[in-house]
Image 1 (tube, protein in one colour):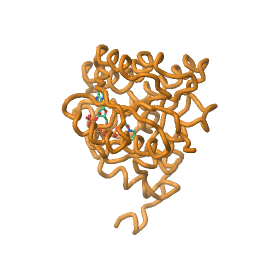
Image 2 (cartoon, rainbow, N blue to C red):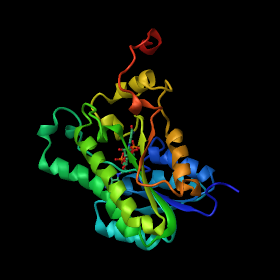
Image 3 (tube, rainbow, N blue to C red):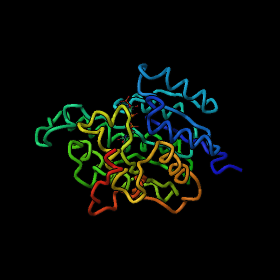
Length: 261
Ligand code: 0WD
C-alpha cells in the first residue's frame, strides 16, 4: 500500500511544469494521493489541465486567492480533502530590488494579501472540507527570517506567512490538523526570477551548503509527501528546511576552484 493511498490533497500554485507545486503534485501522486489542482486564471488553465491529465486525472478548479467569491467557489466544488498545499506568492517586480524603505503602501498590501493572507483565507474557507487529521503545507523561504538582499518585501511577507502557520496550527490542532511550512532553497521559476540577482543564488547555495548542492522541485515534493502522510501525524507548527542545510551555516567557506567553474 502506498503512503498516501486514500488521501486527496489539493495543490495550489501550479503555474507551469517548473513550479515547485508541480514537483510536489508529481511526488504526491507517485505515492498514491488523489489530487485536486487549482489555477489562478484563464492564462494558465490549459497548462494546469494538461498537467492534471498526466497526474491521474486530477480535479481542476479555479482559485484566485484575491477573490472571496473564487475562494467560496473552490470550497463549494472541492469536496472532502485530506490537506492542501499553499504554493502562492506575488510581489511587484519593482519591490524585488533596491531598498525596502521605497516599498509603496500598495505594493506592501498586495504582497501581504497574496503571499501571506491567502493561507489564512484558504484555511478558513476550506476548514469544513478538511477531514480531521489533515495536513496543510505552505512554501516559504529563508528570506523570511534572514536578510537576503533584494528579496525585501517578499521576505517580510514570508515572516507573516510563517507566523500564520503557527497560529493556524493552534486553531486547527484540536482536530488533529497539522500546519507546517517547507522552506525551499532557491529554485529557478517564473516567480523567483523576478528577484534582482536571483540567477547567482542557486550556485551560492550549492557552493556553501553542507550537502554541496542545491535542491530540485522533486526534493521539495518528497518532504511534502512526508508532511501529507500519517508519518508526520505529530509534526505541526514548524518550518522544515529543504535547502541542503544552507540555513544552518554561520560562515561560508571560501569558494574553491570547482565552485568558480
Ligand atoms: O526559489 C524559489 N522558487 C522558492 C520559492 C524558494 C522558496 C519558496 N518559494 C515559494 C514561493 O515564494 C511561493 O510561495 O514557493 C511558492 C511557489 O513559487 P514558485 O514555484 O517558485 O513560483 P511559480 O511557479 O511562479 O508559482 C507561484 C504561483 C503563481 O505563478 P505565476 O507565475 O502565474 O505568478 O503563485 C500563484 C500562481 O500560480 N499565484 C496565485 N494563485 C492564486 N491566486 C495568485 C493568486 N492571486 N498569484 C500568484
